[in-house]
Figure 1: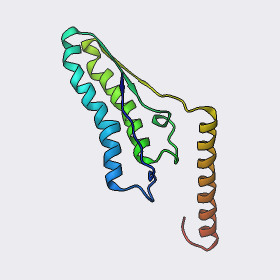
Figure 2 (figure 1 turned 135 degrees about the vertical axis):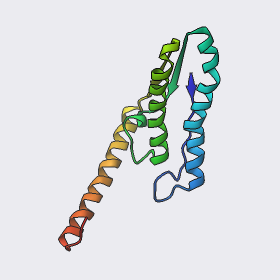
Figure 3 (figure 1 turned 60 degrees about the vertical axis):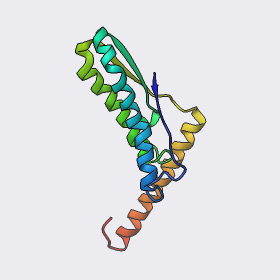
Figure 4 (figure 1 turned 90 degrees about the vertical axis):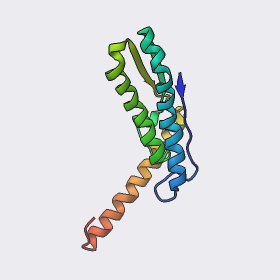
Length: 135
């Protein structure tokens, strides 16, 4: 079981720092890679192994509530898992990614938040178009 994940309170493009971005990527993605890298030699020698990577619902369904660094790293965990299967399947090693689903209330709140932001962007585009400015 390979599980690593953090986020930052200031997680959106308008307020995330480069230091926070680097910390999130280092833990959420590089931490996963280092763990996989450490166990592969033993699994190869046994010609067997199962790696279970814990991603996130954001690994398939990004949200503005989780922010770009978290979304990107959790998508990358899914891609890392697929890469393990492509390269290591010949050695008897399998991998899967688990994407825990938030409780229904949290998921509905994230969806409502994203819809509100999208509506605001559409309004801004329409206002610019009405003033004769490109979107």
